[in-house]
Picture 1: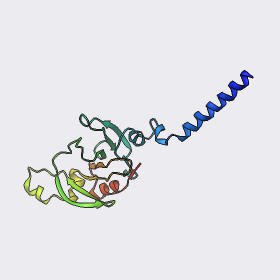
Picture 2: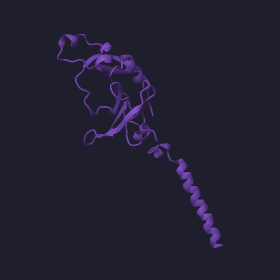
Picture 3: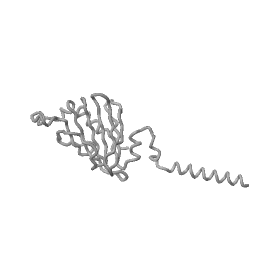
Picture 4: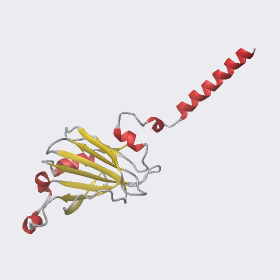
Amino acid sequence: MKGSAQKSLAKKVFSLLLAAVFALPSSAFAMGSGDKFVDAQTGLTYAVSRPVQTLGLKLTAFQLLVCAPGKEQWIYAKYGTGIKYVEIMETMAGDKCSNPGLSKSLASITINKIKTQVHVYCDPTKSAAFKKCSTADIGKVGGYLIFSTKPTKLLKGTEVQVQGMGGVTYAQLVLVAKSLKTL
């Protein structure tokens, strides 16, 4: 009787463990999923987005970088190699973890119902050219779009920067930004 009682108890314990595993949220298993954005989301309290449209450029770099003491890490993703590339940087809304450099701020636009700032990397030391600098110059000198998403029930808001260099046009930056999907 002792052996059969132990087997019965072992089956019950195994069944309970199996039920507990299936009851865990799927994000508990995301680390090592093979999707760098999903893996990053598991350790962050702000909403992570991944682009659907990358202009045919392949992901060539993905890093979680230290922001500052007491701040969460930020995401850096690069699509493309050489001269032409798109970069996506994501931080918790309100945290300034990187400095995009000197640029001219243009009129804001709306992307996915979010006010988005448009910047172009025109040289401020060339005042005549800087004055005329427009979205048409993004394809020549580079530029970026920057916006903040609102928090959700479970996650804090995110500041997202979509930057293009080496011939990435304004229209292409907008296309990539519009394609971002929250995980």
